[in-house]
Amino acid sequence: MGRKSSHEQTSVALKLALFGAGAAAVCAGWKLWRRAGLERLNRNLPRGQKILIVGAGFAGANAARELAKLLPRPEHAEITLVDEDDYQLFTPMLTEAAGGEIEPRHAVSPLRDLPRRITFEQGRVTEIDIPNKKVTLESPTTHGGGANRRTLSADHLVVAVGSVPNFHGVPGVAEHSLTAKSLGDAAAIRDHVLEMLERADAESDAGERRAALTFVVGGAGFTGVETMAAVNDLVRASVGRFPNVKAQDVRALLIAPEERLLPELSVELASYARRQLETRGVEVRLKTKITGAGEGCVELQGGERIETRTLIWAGGVKPSPVVERLDCERGEHGGIVVDECLRVPRRAGVWALGDCAEIPKGASKQTYSPTAQNAVREGRLVARNMVATMRGEEPRPFRYRPVGELALVGRHVGVARVYGINFSGLFAWLLWRAVYWAKMPSARQRARVLFDWLLDFMFGRPADAVIKP
Image 1 (cartoon, rainbow, N blue to C red):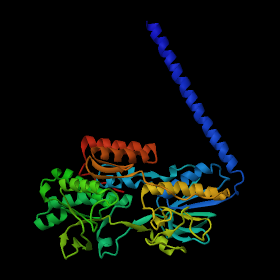
Image 2 (cartoon, rainbow, N blue to C red; image 1 turned 90 degrees about the vertical axis):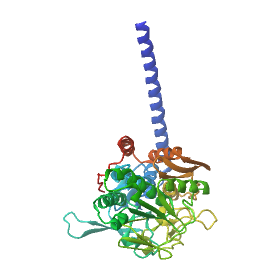
Image 3 (cartoon, rainbow, N blue to C red; image 1 turned 90 degrees about the horizontal axis):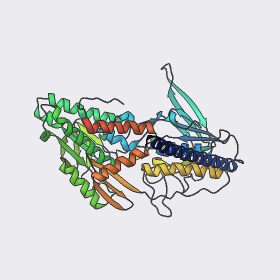
Image 4 (cartoon, one colour; image 1 turned 45 degrees about the vertical axis):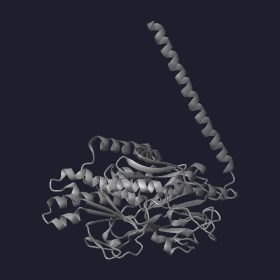
């Protein structure tokens, strides 16, 4: 019996090995066939072309990756990606970092890990010369004296410089608020929240304690709702570690001029999100404008004044300031006007996409929203269109209907609309994590975030840990 069992095991192992070898051979054959096809298509491409992509967000980085696939040989073109930071930020995870559920540095992946076909240049963009397709960069010198300036030129220029917070001209908000846009922002929010708990624990004055424990978020979109949920959960999960801070002393306010939360989702999901926030102690103040902010206070329409040491602004974005200086047409929202194929009109070889561009939806006057899923697909399309024009082919228009939208509204609670179907509660929360975890650019990043989630599930969020960007 033992010999027969051993023989059967050997037979199974041999079959598995043959199956694995066959699958590997098929995969290798497909890659060779695809590469041969690309070689035929690229045979007549003009040599020595320079492609310059400015901005390494979702749009720019995906454009670079797609170009590396379509133009695998260095003689096809030089592909250069430019950004001020040497990492790509996975923005959907920012609120998780702000709430202490993951380490902020795990929300980024190094740009040096991009395919070797791509040359990365780090520097702050000070000027973009659209007509001549030139970009001026500035970076600190190694000896610390002044800045190093250099100019890069291109045959094809892709502008994907992203966006910055839009304060809508509200007095004092830019100077007295935290934002939720960058890696440093996420770390700053978490550090600040924990600092306020420490201050309240040591404060003898009741008024100062109340102000330290009042947390205000401005904005009712995805960023505002998710930031409020994360901050509120962090505070209420941490108060037990501070002897002089009681849960009933905490005040969390979500303030926005809109009529409801999450206008991108259905009324039913928005109402559910509001109920969940209010159940967790958040005051939701809609149809209310923040009219000003000062040192230690927020002013609302009607003259109401809220004493607080924490204002987090999530009231929308606008194109990067560098766009204002470009020699091209700008649209209603300040972005670069492009045609349906992502080309800048009357500027041959110049393309724009992502948050800094206004991409038309067919014949309508509407434009695509500045979301990550739009930017990813815009990046891939602009790469294909660029190569198509180099081959003498016609580019394709951008057409995309989002698969769905997801948002977190509290610990283990979310809302989602996928393929027109609404989900809420624990399943939507799990779906949010599964979708965004799967979309992270590298296996190493996914492993680190999964480990963070495991630690958070097992031990909770340590209130005494200070995370630095």
